[in-house]
Every structure is written in structure tokens, then in C-alpha cells.
Length: 229
Ligand SMILES: [Zn+2]
Image (tube, rainbow, N blue to C red; front, side, top):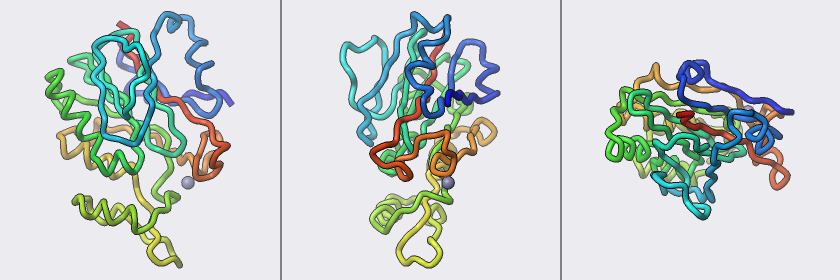
């Protein structure tokens, strides 16, 4: 399988490349395109944190964290996931991009909100100019969690409607990770019509790696964004 999914609204932006690669797309997919040959690639050691890196120089070593923001051209910001939600952001006016890894822990820490806030303070971005893309992730119909997850979300003022009881099971819930992150963008002033979501559940769609489905055997899907100039 060798598939790359893109967002039409992002494709219309002449100065970015982006995409969400299905299982097996990975490194090979990034290497294939002629015009990407001299682009640098930036990966993070993802740790389910709220650590955000503003990239103003290409770092010499792998950074630890879960989000990157940059205005540098020809640099791929790459997020690897298997069920977690990958989010890409662009400010068309300021020419600033971000890539974010949103699992339940990062979501609970309001990582995405902090990224928007970082784009504001570091680059002068106005949230109404931001365009966001949510890639494939485990859906709210499949992402089963327990009270250990629901409790901290409630304590951190997330609405309880993000958790739907699993029929026939006590103290088990389906968490809607997308909605939990959508709320954060809205809270920061990103418009609903600037939020684009790929409605694919990684747990159901076998083209995509799923940690919940395949456990240790799960690969990682690549989500990426770069400024071309
Ligand atoms: Zn599913």
C-alpha cells in the first residue's frame, strides 16, 4: 500500500507541500518526489508531552517533544502515528506551518491550543487566518478508554460529551479525540470552516497502522508539511 491523502484546501496553497501517508508510504514516499530531494526532514522523539519546538535552525540532534512550528522553507515537519491524531496547521498570510502529535495525553495537556498560542506569540499569527488539517486517527466510535482517562479530562474542564459510554460495559467510554482537539482550535479563535478533517478511522481502515488493532506489529503513518519557498 502506497497511498497519500491530501486536503484540497491545502493543495490550493501554492507554497506548501503536505500529506498523510498510509501504511508503507513513509520514508520512501518522501524520497520519491524529485522536487523534494534537497528538503531536510525533521522528526521528533514523540513523548506524549506538551513540548513544542519553534524551529529557527535545523537542529543537530533529534528533539524530544510533540509539536514543531516553523517559518523555514524546504524543511519537512514529520509526525508519526498509529491511532493518535496528526494535525497540520498553516498560516497563509505569515507563511508559518506546524505539525502536531495529539494522543490523549497531549490532548489533555491542551497541546494544540498551546501550539496556536505559540504561533501567535512567536510569529504574530492571527488564529482567524489559520487553516488546520486533522489526519486519519482512531475515531470516537472505536477509541475505548476507562475512567483513568475520563477523570483527568473532567478535572481539566473538558466537556463530558467527549465520552460516550460503551454499551454493556460499565466505566468504559469512547473518547472523541478529534472533537477534543477541535474544541481547542475553536477556543483559540480558529474558524470552523478552516478546520478540515479526514474522516478515516485508523482502527477500522486497514490501509492505516493502528496500535489498538495491531499492537507491537503496528507501523507508523507519516504526516508531513513543508514550506516550498
Ligand atoms: Zn474505527
